[in-house]
Amino acid sequence: MKILHTGDWHLGHTLFGYDRTEEQQSMLQQMVGIAKEQQPDVFVIAGDVYHTPQPSAAIQTLFNKTIIQLHDQCPKMPIVVTAGNHDSSSKHEIFRTPWEYLNVFMIGSFDRDNPHRHILQIPGVGFVIALPFTHERNLQGGVLQQLLDETEKRNTDHLPVLLTAHTTIAGANFKGHDDADGKTIGGIDAIDVHSIGTGYDYLALGHIHHPQFVHTGKHNVRYAGSPLPVSFDEEYEHSVSIVEIGSHGEQPKVQTVSIANPHPLTTLPAVGAASWKDAKTLLKDFPDDLPNYIRLNVEVTDALPSDAKQEAVQLTDGKQCRFCLINVVKHRSTRTATAQVTVEQLRLMTPLEVAQMYAKDTNMLFDEQMQQMMLEVMEQVKANI
Image (tube, rainbow, N blue to C red):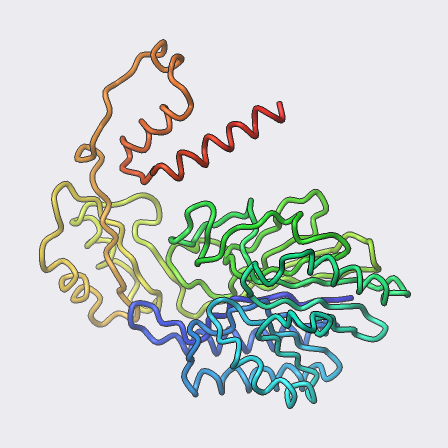
């Protein structure tokens, strides 16, 4: 089985008021080109097709045309589209029947009364268990393992089994998600991957934008990541994953194909923060012909001038770049600093006390809930030593 695994397209997303349709059109055409070249057995979009539950008619039309183009390039290839937490489950479901005539399977909501509906068999190729975003209460009682067991019964030819889900898996790298607190991303609580069950050969995940494997020891649980960045903090390559599985029980082979963005997101300076004077120089010297989005990281002692944003906009006049924001970083000397401690004092402190001191010194949030989580992790570590 050869799989093109993607997700988190976030069609309709705007960046600081800038329309991104051109970028999204480019990304979608690259998707069509990759499918034409790779000729996958199945194309999986693991949730968050749209950025909002109510996308515009133009954005929905863009998506529909892309799906038809994908079908035209690979008529025998099933296209499996599951809803994410940003999507409207009903919009995925409403045209489910006509889409199936084009070998497109739109899965908007989890059918608790008929869970076997989520098992899709691709004759001679393999099985796909397609799960949309759903509240964890709908998956209680070992439902996922039941689906995997049912698939195992049907899989008499030992064909590959693909499971797809839109969720937060504990242990994943959350870089780029500014709402991450270590346990919850985008309102979805992290779950232990082992609670999902056993019997799949590859778990195609959506929701986390950083492409990555989640460690299980089997190298078969992966976020494909977002093909386009939705924030300046997504400072990593954006791509799709091409997955090949020989037979049921074999380890998948994965390669990535990069997605180019005609309007890259750029932070000035690239590392750290600059003074307001130096930041303005960087912006002024930025090449006139580069159509990048720009964020300035500015270190200040007191506050920025009241007309700073207006001045930054003026500096980009006549340039192709799109100025977005000034990210203010407080100068270290203005932060609340803790008293210096001796090595002997440090040895007498508990790890929690050291963390509390560090959080205070760096103005990091370290509330009671986070402190309790740290204590629980420390206990788990001690138990496994």
